[in-house]
Amino acid sequence: MKVIDSIKKYTLRIWRSQALKYVVVCAAGVLIVGFLDENSLWNHLKNRERIAELMEEKARYNEVFERDKAQIRNLERNPKAMEKIARERYFMKADDEDIFVLSDDERAPKSVVSDATAQ
Image: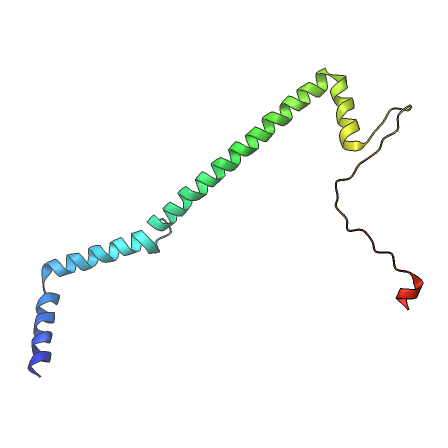
């Protein structure tokens, strides 16, 4: 019983201490602001990471935009470029031409089964 009484005594002495109240309030404030609040440090770090991702995405889209813009300018100035795109993408041809489309697809050869082995 002496041990429990001494623990109670020290606990009450610490609890009545003026400094402990400030420490507890400061620790609670740091926990709330650091982790629980919507403007917490955790959310701030996640938002910074998201901003970095969005900036990279923006750079990629700007690069694609500039490439497409240059291609549009080329199409407006050069009729041969339009003809090239029509031939490559849409398989269009002139009247006196034949087009052969070669595929790179790898297909397994079909096995030939005779009627005798199938029965």
